[in-house]
Image (tube, rainbow, N blue to C red; front, top):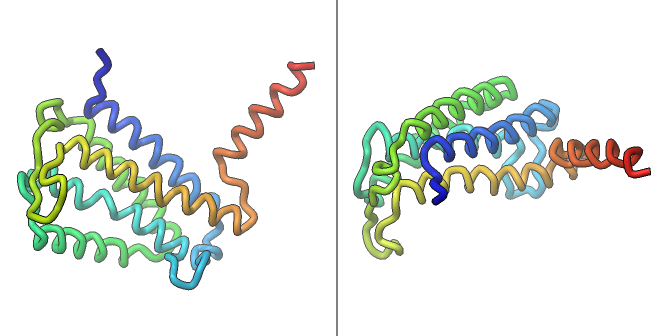
Length: 181
């Protein structure tokens, strides 16, 4: 039987966050104001969003250990997350927040038991499903980051930067070429 628990979730999140930090470092600060379209977030806004996004998960599942999330709760959590996000404006602030908040969140995930991950959290109508496990909700934090990171990889291409994961794959392929001959 395969079990995916808090330790595995923490390690998977650390991998995702490392890749996000690498993108944040690869994009020059003078390009942090770049927007792919006028209505989209800038590079800085996208990265600040990711740096702050785990805060509410940590609150809901850790500090407050909510068993039911009302619309008012959600608004409060999102408001505080937006405040954190707006306070991150420079590349050094953003990269440091990505590191610190990522480390804090991964450490929190690591300590969760299978019982805690299996607890159900409820939502008011018309939200469907009306309950989700903490595991599902915390996995969504990682998926959320991967979604935004994919957007940033497209932005890197628009800025003429080859994403680090692509560079690594190209290097592996180039290293195999002489061996194949």
